[in-house]
Amino acid sequence: MGDSQYSFSLTTFSPSGKLVQIEHALTAVGSGQTSLGIKAANGVVIATEKKLPSILVDESSVQKIQCLTPNIGVVYSGMGPDFRVLVRKSRKQAEQYHKLYKEPIPVTQLVRETAAVMQEFTQSGGVRPFGVSLLVAGYDDNGPQLYQVDPSGFYFSWKASAMGKNVSNAKTFLEKRYTDDMELDDAVHTAILTLKEGFEGQISGKNIEIGIIGTDKKFRVLTPAEIEDYLAEVEGQGWKYGSGFVDGVFPVLSPIAQQILDFVQKEVDADRVWGSLDNLSPSHTTWDDLINVAVQLRLNKKWDPIVLLCEWILHRSSFQLDVMCFNLLIDAYGQKSLYKKVESTYLELLEARCVPTEDTYALLIKAYCTAGLKQKAEAVFAEMRKYGLPPSAVVYDAYIEGLMKRGKSQKAIEVFQRMKRDGCQLSTETYTLMINLYGKASKSYIALKLFDEMRSQKCKPNICTYTALVNAFAREGLCEKAEEIFEQLQEAGHEPDVYTYNALMEAYRFKSFIILYFLIPGNKLVVLMF
Image 1 (cartoon, one colour):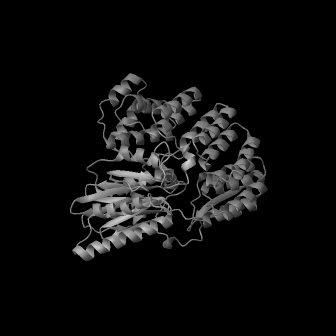
Image 2 (cartoon, one colour):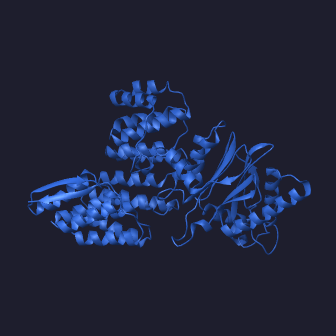
Image 3 (cartoon, one colour):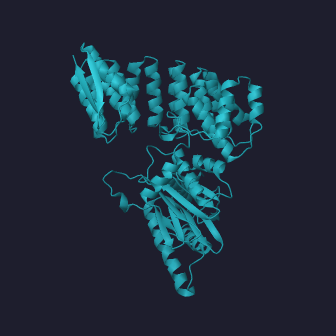
């Protein structure tokens, strides 16, 4: 018999020795939002995504990180109601211990008692396992401690761990970043960067939670304002497709990174470059410097030095293989129209047991579109489905942009419509691309319709969106409409750039006006037409 025959029985082992209901519970955990914990030298940090099902939900009523005792906190991935039950039972156990012994319960003992409750629900009739895994952070006489407890009741201590839907990428990132002498503030920065690795949308103090405990042995949850301060400190770290660094922040190069950048841009001999890189110490600081250099090269569109640098990291250095380097290398080869190299790099990524990200697939599609290989681009979607990954806006956007660059506007429109049918959430970049497409086709009325749809979906336009719409009206000589959108751009708090001004001037050029324009205090544009 197959294991499926036993999937509805909690207390009966399948022939392969499994309790299948526990595996189902772990699936529930794996479908939950990403959570992680890091034990530092002087404390522990736990963090989690906090994405609400609707903008109508009061965000202050949702708390994924809870305090069990003054010196112990917990976070979960999986089913929220199950978590509440375990929090209540754990607090009751801690209170009973304190009442009996007049001292706080040790972290290990509270974890053991909580795990015992979870284990009991795997061998009793009429109940089911808890569909939740816990990360418990505490600080007692034994120092900082981090434990993970799974639905089976199995618990163990970790230096750093992650759980939830992005567990593979998160653990890979933590393995690369973690050091035993890490301070608490560094651990908070690392936790934020780890969440950023698989975060969809703009990360902020409102959609993540962070709890910390230090040598004062007082666990607390950071306020959104405190999280925003930490986010400001880590901006410029963590590469992501399409913008150089996350949030479009340009890399800040250290003096050593600047020297590496200058050298690899001047030197073309691979042996000399690799020989010099061999002298670098394999530290986390060096890793950050190398990635900063690679991203700066990408911003400068220097593809050959990126290939030299990333090939050295992947094939000659002692650094752990990382999807970030594979992504940079795929991007560089794609820009050089070397799609065979792109494919071999992707296969090498899989052989290295790195987990492809949505950025990896977006870069593959972009490379195939650049080479004019539409069928191979379509095959990427099949590859994603094979691994159970639904195509995201990042992947679709790369496909639409690639088709537009090849002059395949009708096909891009078809992909956009398919994106809607598949229920993929449209991003600001998606709408901007399509507004630009219809603007170039002199269909400003459709571009405006998309713009209105975008705002009705609570998708916030950026300056590129406004500029694309101004351009759409400019191409048809609709000066008043172009001015109206320009004013909306300013009212939204955006600073007009040279591209926006040029787009507006283009509208007047079509009307054969002579134009003078200047700014007055308050950043208002004054236009004189003759």
